[in-house]
Image 1 (cartoon, rainbow, N blue to C red):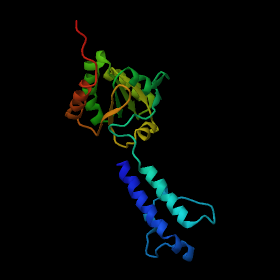
Image 2: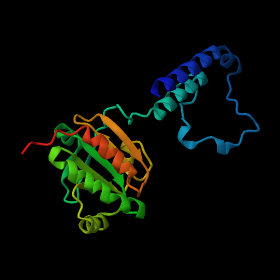
Image 3: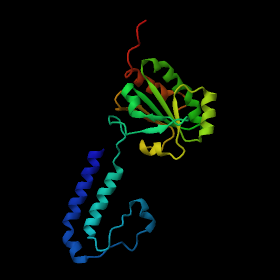
Image 4: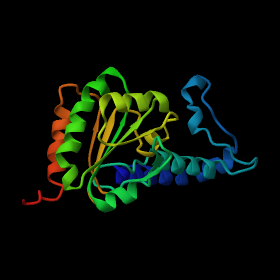
Length: 219
């Protein structure tokens, strides 16, 4: 959790602070001779100006790593700001959707596993659309392919294309598909990742949706 990450970072800072006198004496960088350079991940190499105190550089490095690992997209948290254009170029603003009611975001593609699941998610939208649910599918394929797919599958939900995968970065996931259920107002209620052609994932999400939508209107 975030609290634990910052606790570890704090302990690391205390340890490094206690070693300041040693840095003052040695005043040189030390890399073990038997260390494989391949073990140093390039995304975690930080460049500081020449003459920058080594102990401060290490401290800042720890803080930067802790910030990178902080996961903000999680159940109970508020959804991130998310805007994307549909096939017609119209902007879809998640904040506007969640202001009206619950939203089910699906980051997906047209692969065989996701394709087998799409029927279940269409059924969820059909079952709860009159009670305020909005479903949004974001595909990784090009517009032309998705447009044909949407027509063939008779998609009954909002959909958009993101070939660069920026949506996956926003939602802090690399899994295909990833489903995020949001309550009215934007609070994250559930996150379900991975394909399940049996329909179990969709069934569980459907049950969660039922607890979020408005009661059916009496005739």
